[in-house]
Image 1 (tube, helix red, strand yellow):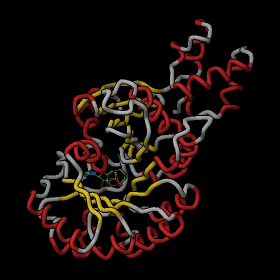
Image 2 (cartoon, rainbow, N blue to C red):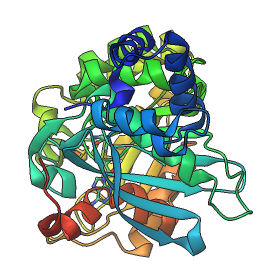
Image 3 (cartoon, protein in one colour):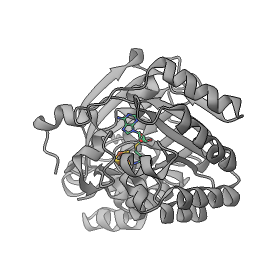
Image 4 (cartoon, rainbow, N blue to C red):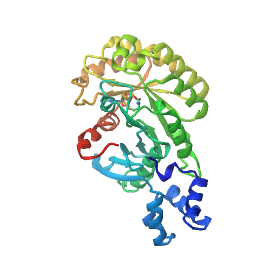
Length: 351
Ligand code: SAH
Ligand code: SF4
């Protein structure tokens, strides 16, 4: 399945012409879909009868199944059906100076990180480029309804929703092209961040093709022994290999990567893990983000205690590593990816 956002302008044009319409209509429809994100039924400059035919023959492919609000409306988590089939989570977060959408790249994930709600599902489907872009289009519309304390305009995109974007590389990269294309969504590369569990060939190609796009690496452990357990893909690309790939990415892009670290009670929150993280973070000039674990039904483990987090932070800071502990909202959102899906799954068809 796909959405109208999978079509290039030429493809859309020939579909519109095939409906017996002049080609200028295609330009009208494209502008509204991409520049304003309006669905056919609200395209005021398109005749009403044609709107119905467009909807029937070229579905937009974005259905909002549920929206949950938090942080007094500044955070919105949506369950969307994209492309008529695939159900994904998309989260919009409004801050004082920016509005960020967290998009999904797959339904489920094959990487098998046990603490992750999405990993617990296994991989169900890759999303197409248009299905990824459709989430950004939803977010752009939803941004207008955010509280006045935010810019009310979508400014940033992070690939931190369901799925491993670099194991759906072809569609992820095609989505990046569309998100950044000034004739499509026009969001600057520097306002986009790719989060990966450490798919090494994908990191190399991301740096080559999109050197301005930011990189976040979900490390979670600083020894292979522990990382093999928490992040099974470490057996394929162990720490030394991953570190080299991120170092090469940094040399190429001159950008500072982030290291993501879910703080899991008495698992990866020891001072020893922090001490071993220090040389990695320093070598990569990385910013470390600590995310207290968001407990999931399939993983009977708790987030780290405040004191363990405090000790971990102290080790990093004393060594000169830049570190941030995510606030509750960051935790609720970034960490909870896949959870709304689980909650509502019995009522939706996952495709
Ligand atoms: N597959 C990519 C992107 C999606 S996950 C990746 O792993 O990076 C986005 C972030 O949420 C990752 O850093 C991931 O490790 C983290 N995460 C997943 N489940 C979590 C949980 N239960 N608690 C805290 N962080 C979690
Ligand atoms: Fe997949 Fe990322 Fe979850 Fe691991 S943390 S299972 S890579 S979505």
